[in-house]
Length: 159
Ligand SMILES: [Zn+2]
Image 1 (tube, protein in one colour):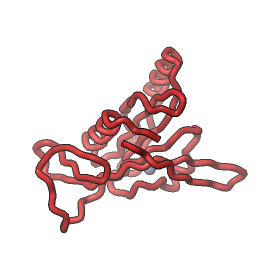
Image 2 (cartoon, rainbow, N blue to C red; image 1 turned 120 degrees about the horizontal axis):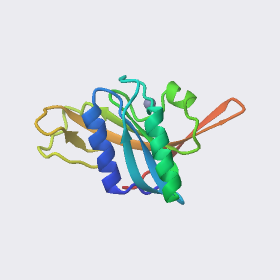
Image 3 (spheres, rainbow, N blue to C red; image 1 turned 180 degrees about the vertical axis):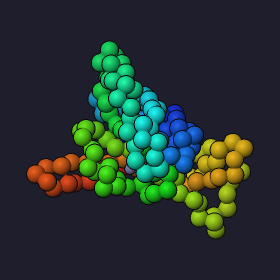
């Protein structure tokens, strides 16, 4: 799956701005292409859970309808966790779309930190004027549930 860099950048920015809470958002696409990112609020205001407010969800779905787009992916961050679906994520995976999870972990202290602001998959980012730095990893998953059996399949992302 190709993830256009500007979308990735918006997701990272949204996750950093929402930190230490979980950030979430929706990705619109067409025919398997990821085209647009809609950052949303996290109604739960939690560090380990998220929920897109129903009014924002509805507004995005209306726009998708209007423009002939589909819900291609649901994005959320793991401010302190690895990039893998949690039990809650699996339980609440109700859409047949891609699930994008961005983990923000403390960087390995032995790794020399760049002084710059931005970014790339697996590289470090820091908020401007803020000393916090993170090791970023964004991964995509398909979560399938059939007769009680759960299959989690990673879908490689190409920036
Ligand atoms: Zn999660």
